[in-house]
Image (cartoon, rainbow, N blue to C red; front, side, top):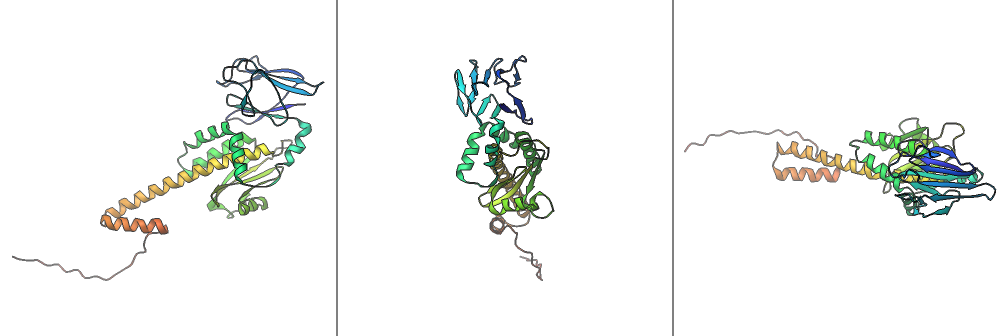
Length: 302
């Protein structure tokens, strides 16, 4: 039996079992799969399942904004196979056949280094999701808001029950997710570590791990992590890295301006420039020294 995993923005993924025959998709409430998306037509597409011939296909019903299979717009009928991705508006459908899940799942287990190919594939496969991620993270004005937004996005997009974002300053300080063997291996190798029910993905800036994403499936009967889940996590970690770097840069500029305003009250502009230069190079202000001085006051008469 074929299944569709339906990904709607800001909601948890929902499985839909495709029955033999026709399944209608669209914005009209009379459809088998109702889409409350402005990009969907009232009667957008149909999925046809022929169990006798073991065939499945999708038909675009001359929709306004189109039906996309694996990033290509289709016209008329298009045959489908396991792991195909369908997009209608902002809604993503992953096509899964339970009889083939074992082979799909095994590809996700183990260590996955952040190669250029893995990153590019992840970004290419999940462009719609990244648009939503970038839109939400752009409103974040603190690291706390970034962590909250990432946690919600990961739970919704991957359907996990437990999700934590551990920032760099908390690595190894508590007996928590960042201290498990898989997490430590992910930080050491700067790579994603995946098991059937756990996934640890570092947020990298060059060779530095700025944060660690801890994802766990705790509900019995939920699907184990697949390569598609790994790609989603890698794509989100890349966007998170850019956002955290932007936040750190803004914080650095804000602190520099505070220091500049403070020093301007007491020393000359040339001294302020020298002090700031030293601060930018070392990250510290010059140490304070105590001196004994003598001050002489004089009155000069003409």
